[in-house]
Image (cartoon, rainbow, N blue to C red):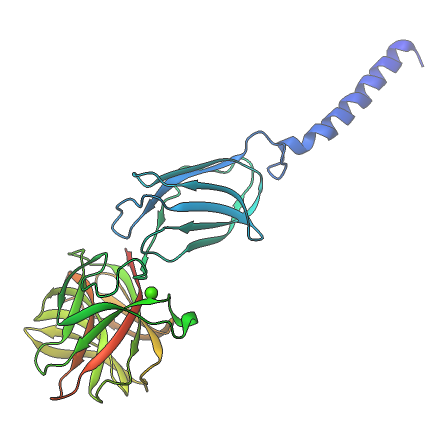
Length: 309
Ligand SMILES: [Ca+2]
């Protein structure tokens, strides 16, 4: 082999070796890839207003790898992320349950510029006992207050719950979330009727509430679940299903509503689908009624979820 040929062969081998050694740096899975992922975004409430002081964490197997805290504009930024699959969580010191996203693949060259996160569940943990109108709520008819309930912790966020009570024979008790003019949404709440209630208890959630005489209502009785609307003070049944409900048990009610179609879920399972768009928009809220003389309906509500569409 001539010297020149030896040099060429050596150079070729060196090039191949060099290429092999460096090849992984072009891989999105390589921790040495210089183009590491980042996430930038805003943490918001359901109405898009910013959440200050929310903590965003990236973790693997429950170990926190990176974290950031939102500023008063709700903004956060996590950079220089080692390529991997993460669990992304957001926790706010006030009012909300933990938000979680898993898996989130953050390989190199993953640039997430508008990763906005909506916290959507009101848990009442930061509203003091006795509060009549808790955070995010705006007005209440009848008797409402924040109380403690430490029972069945796996069924709801403890200890605080929002108690509604109706003891008169005329108007139901209604507490409304602050935001008005909501048309399309997902709205859910957990509720438990206390066994001290009379036999005529009726409880539920209201939506597109315009005034105490006009709104939609999803309510449960001891033996059925019914979607209806209240028009000029009179109930108009839309659709219902026979179902046994007991006191002292937590149930989850939810309504998903686009312009005209409502889908109703009981304990996170499809229950009723119906089309009705005569009331176009309004507030969301909680509802309790007992129309018998001498008895009252008492209900705990918790984990109220609002997602605007
Ligand atoms: Ca709670």
